[in-house]
Image (cartoon, rainbow, N blue to C red; front, side, top):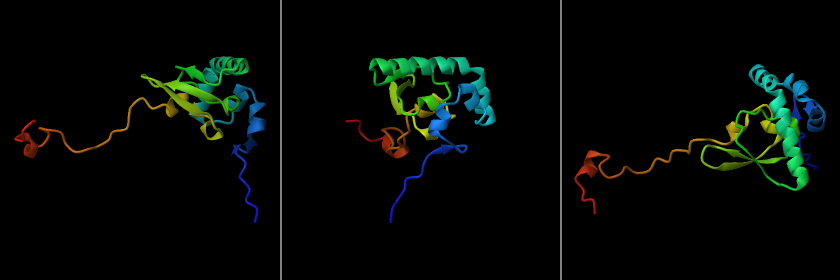
Length: 132
């Protein structure tokens, strides 16, 4: 029995078809909020894609950015980015599932809370224990 990997499609179009589209043409395939954001900043998105592609052509493997509000477009699929989260750069590889989302969604600014046992003085029972 042959197992075939399902080909990724976004709104019925393959990645190759999507990569031939211009940013504004791709925006027509997005949902309303994403479309509005993309159309408002299409020039900034196109400039970022152009700069990223030239950096990759020069031999850079990873591109660093502070731009958390850019919408992910098909031309970015396969690129490795490092997105700034306010403290350090979070490595992210762009996949087809990320289309239409913003960079910032993949670089969380707050760490996950780890609930461990209570510290000294946090509860009445631990209030009178020695602090040594």
